[in-house]
Length: 94
Image (cartoon, rainbow, N blue to C red; front, side, top):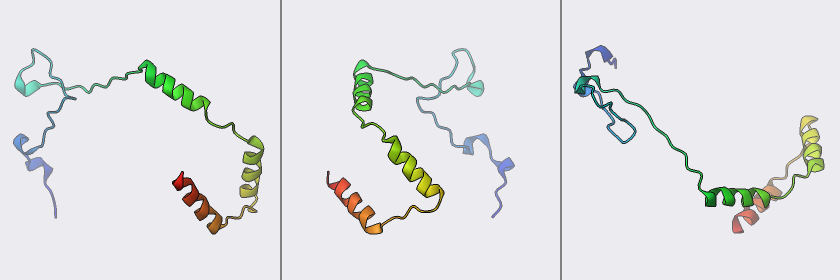
């Protein structure tokens, strides 16, 4: 099926007239300009919550990370499907 986009008339093109589009005041209807807007809010409670969450994470055990990285890199890292499944089930129950 071939679609000829040049034959579409302006009235057939869907237009989103949502809150993200703003028209400039003195422009006629045929010349509406649009702009996207976004705003960020950094409320004190959310910043404090994120800070406390970050501070409560356990420290990285770099020796374990290095050991696992080297065993993956040299091809000696082996996985046990049963242990992985058990760990997933245990984690899901908490």
